[in-house]
Image 1 (cartoon, rainbow, N blue to C red):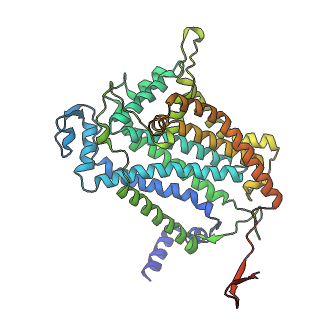
Image 2 (image 1 turned 180 degrees about the vertical axis):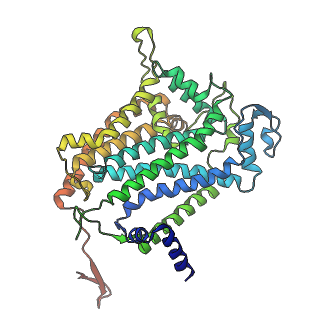
Length: 455
């Protein structure tokens, strides 16, 4: 009764009853893959909540201090206030280490969720007209989220993140003509500058979260306006959406997914250590640790840098260093190709129609094969980014591992394309994966079993 009166009070003033009724009856497809995007949305909410807590205790000041805290192995060491505040957050603040680890694990899941969601969009053709804008927003969201994750990863000013920042500064400086300005914009001076951690802090907690929130909001608004796509099935056409209403069916499923995500990230944060900066120590420019690994979403850039040949070019009296090709040109080509893919495929297929019904991956073998090749290419580069770890534990020369990944990065995607194309083509001819014949077992008089068919 109280809820009903409150709803009437709101409707009398805002006239929201019609919109709310329409929203609660909005149909959502029942296929599980349509909930992949919600993993990212809920992960972002968790990141904002945990990040707000962490920001209350983190000090981005890079001036030096002497540590006298509970971690006695670093007692008397000189370090930045940023590093000291991260130690304080981890060892003194109640729940600080738990929330810091939950924040880090959630960031990894957030980026992974975007990749899986985009892969589903690509393989099912959900980027086709009229959903090209949302495809572009998704690619942009992934790029911004990568930079957001890198900024947060770099804030503690530990030895590992400092090494990553030094690489990032080298990448910025390698850009012809504007490299010095990019480096100054990022760091505020020559590396390592006093301004780099405060600038990354502002970008990490103010600018980039606002951009991500804006992209997600526009994405959801477009989905609401255009309605969900759906897989072919009974009663499903290019003009309708068949599924469950938002309330109560889809809302219950969505809240259950939120509970699972919260449980997973809390369990990971409580049981699985991640980024123990006290083991790396504070950053000093003349030190480097090995083996050293970045977070997975920048591993493909790290891998490309490690296996790229040392080619430098000297046009017009200027030098384009070897760093430029794998870390600037390659990502520009990959992101440019993905951004333009809806129009590239349209030019190939000459299909200008609007599509509400999705393709099953087997129905378009060449697109599925291309997706498999792209994923294999990314996997090969990411694996190459841990060549030093593999050399250490496999007792293999790191030079041999680099040669292997140079060959695998070129040959692996071609092999994946051929295998995926053959598999998808065969499944298309068979009409999909056939379900196993159902039987029931009955014990006979001899003690054995006999099969009876079940329709």
